[in-house]
Image: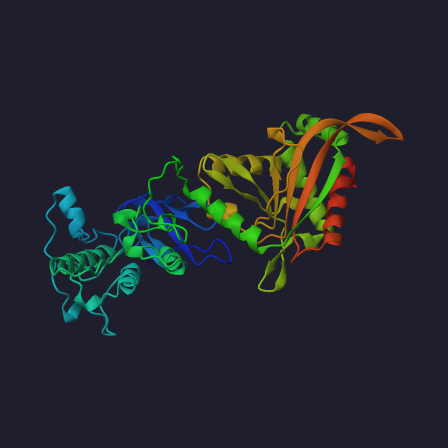
Length: 447
């Protein structure tokens, strides 16, 4: 039977996802597990894989469309299955047809046979959503296929706009994402006055200016160059703003002696032959500390503290477009060589923009390491909905007290940022103390 491809829920608070681009076209043969579409979530851009092998059909969401979680966006038909053959051609919107020089198929009125048994017009979920946004009666929309799609509704909206303009009335209907409409309403802006950068001129969230600012730039004596941001950067900005303005942060700082950690790294590389890094050692030690202090492996949700069953550790990875956090699942169960291979895999795919949904799901704690950039210490912003994030500075020789005498030893600064709603100072300090002991004496992990 046909297998539906739905908009996935990659986190608890996610309500919608945005289709960035299809990697396969309707009618293409796909294999199970093959990437077929790129989706933008509240965290990152991911590739969705085909849930079954067959022929891709019934694509109802196009690039730029914002779709509710759980809604079907396409279907995969098995070879030889009804529906795996050629799909009816989509009706080209009037504006697109004029731009390409193509002659659109004359639309026809849907007759009674083309209506469902409930008496409603056959239409894709996306077409119904757009019709609802624009106040369009689907019974008045004409289509050549018998089933109303997004293009049919947009063509009808465009024709209504043209008719209104011909009558000398102002009734502009603008395509826009639901979030853009909500933001415009909250900021008291007329969405029809905004210039959309999305497909077909649709207004996106990035097109909605802040309250009190005009939709168009006003020339002034001071020249300011606007730098455009990508999807990942915008998502990072929105999430960090939410975390900073909603989670009460506090910070715990600890300087640790890493002389034994340095020795452990050398031995681990020789014994395993794997490319083990300090990040791998830290993930291993943080996982062990979380086993001892499970309360840190939690989050604040709906007025309660939600405890995570597994120890899944996220690694903050800098990419050209911003910051992403792939997750190493069940880190406490992995041997060092396995952990290093897993880390290398997810980090390389994050930098290549090839993360899968599972790569960013389920994180309970995050490590952000800026030591390779020469940073001594910093305060990281908690990665919601997690309770804490560990900021790691560089390893440097510093003068410390050793057996009552000054000595030069390699040390590292650790800063634990905590969400005070889910974690208090005492529990955070106990966790950081346990982690410091493991770093200063890694053999305790074996014991």
